[in-house]
Picture 1 (cartoon, helix red, strand yellow):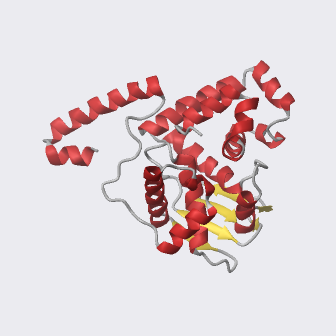
Picture 2 (spheres, helix red, strand yellow; picture 1 turned 60 degrees about the vertical axis):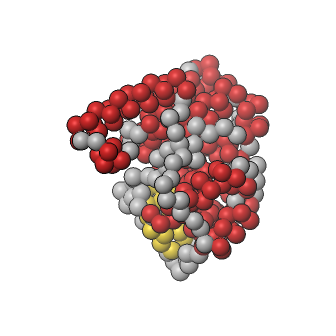
Length: 266
């Protein structure tokens, strides 16, 4: 926005208008838990015919969107693919299917946010199956490595997360949730501010002794969710996208707050 303002006005006027806009949007976010706008793309990017076929054939979330939002989704997927470097390890070959399904998973999580590209990664590394991490000296299915500015997947386990539905186990959602978590708490754009505020509210509510006991005793979320606050967020986002109806039925307030945090309504 600031670039447009600089074209139209002097720097001083442009900065003043930008300041007023930021304050107004912050207050709007406090009232309605969403930014002024989410989708605005002067130059909409398109996918290749093969990429579009894969998206439509294999990513069900896309097919649930209205037609205008499908175009926004395609644009975001194409932009994501162009921005980040995809690297195959141990002989793994990066294909259109790999790019589309990984990019679409990230776009799905951030579709209610205006800024959907992460500043804390610059590459996606993909192994054919579980890989050995020399850092932790254990085998991994996936991880977010902030030092390497990378998100890493076992393709076998990534695909399994989408092929086996309603089990609330989705490696792609889980690991991108970690990336989103770090990005959302450190960025200062409108969507990140809303994310951070709602995340803090969720933490406050779930850490209340009575609420925490109810959550644990329900045995609804798998026990791994209670490892720490980062894993809790990653796990509840898996449940939010994999079995939203049951999540809402079991914990309606938590479900509502997650939707507000992502500005994403099922």
